[in-house]
Amino acid sequence: MRLKEGEKAINFTVTDLSGKTISLEDFKDKKILLSFYRYASCPLCNLRISQLIQQYNDLKKKGLVIIAFFQSPKESMLQYVGKQNVPFLLIPDPEREIYKLYRIEKS
Image (cartoon, rainbow, N blue to C red; front, side, top):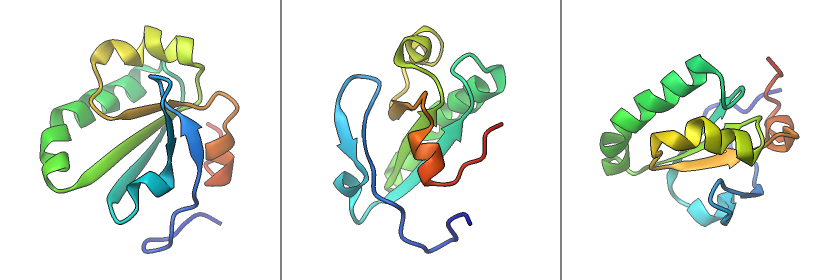
């Protein structure tokens, strides 16, 4: 069963694309968009990241924190997604650990 609106998000600790360790608890009392993508080389996923980059300042002003997960290794993300100068957190999750935690189906 997936999370429903208003349910408490499941805590996790991961390493972001820059090598920094983050935990969901770091963002306690903040609005968070957890966004899950297929692969770093996916054109549609990169289009969506580009759209979020364009909307980022407005979303940030509203207090929204964006954390984007890719089921790709760090190296692949740096080659594709990382070239976009993304202003929000990018998380490589090639083993799909957080996907499984949140019951995100494999595409």
